[in-house]
Length: 464
Image (cartoon, rainbow, N blue to C red):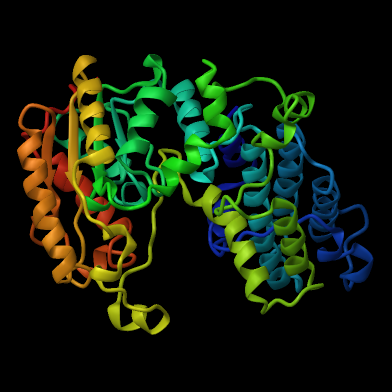
């Protein structure tokens, strides 16, 4: 039975509703120091022979904390999750009339955060038995995509692009919008990667994925920055220099493994390259240091106001928990210029490295043409979408580059791909649709998805 279905079966409906709130922060419970000992908690008389749900909750929480200290494999982390579920169930069972109820409810929220963490670790431990591509988001999305295919089959529509795509097109809203038009049953997955350029997308589609992983249609959502050949393409450079790229060059493509990734990695000649370490947003962060810092933050042995510790804790949980089952990153933050620039400097377009040495064509143009030819040879419709930007972002320099980009794409798209320019669609550039000046939030991602679904000129696959 899938893990979340088991959770729904185990927890009563009224308890589940109470548990789902207050779980925005996730930390790593790896020490019993952070949990209450039954002997340290004031005792409330319990009828002889009756079960004390509060004591049971503490017992299972202590067990979960102990198991978490040595958990490594998916099965071990699953056992930790079961203990947290038991702890949550018993704490939620403390009656409303019991004087310990308010405290128990706080423990429910706390244990839910730990449960989410252990679920994340079970997923991380189950990731591909394959060397890293020097990109946490690529490693994460690749493992999720292959798992999605195993569970759901190949997607009908695959969304690709940079971070603007990851949080800029909501697969579920797109699917719902198409279903409303009679195109029901379509599968949509967002395989966006932070920092992706045209070269990265070419790598994804033509090298990383095998024929059995390709969709019926490709929706490439991004903007001018991904096609500027004058900027330094750090993401692609990191991928090309990665152990994963070397393994791929030898003819071995990534695939899901039914074995224990940790044991298989240790048995290999280059175990340190394998993806069994705790996930972090930054590819350069040290996982052991991050774990130590998160433990300090949790137990109070470190400075809770330390920017290093707080940032590390956020990094540990941000990526794995932010991405949903369809590869999409929903962001609730709404862009407010007056508040935004109180904490950040305003960077003018002429000083923006993404627009440096601006050049359309070049290596990114070659990669674009290669993707278009690749899709055409396999009869996969390719739709390239220019995502909207805020007026705040589009100063004179960036606006001029946007005009050049639109002209360039219209010129080369005639025989190569379908071009859709949402940057000029009225209403999609509202600040409330953005997290920051150039990245959409979940409201904007839904608006973009609805706009695309309503476009009858896009050759959407037929519904199932």
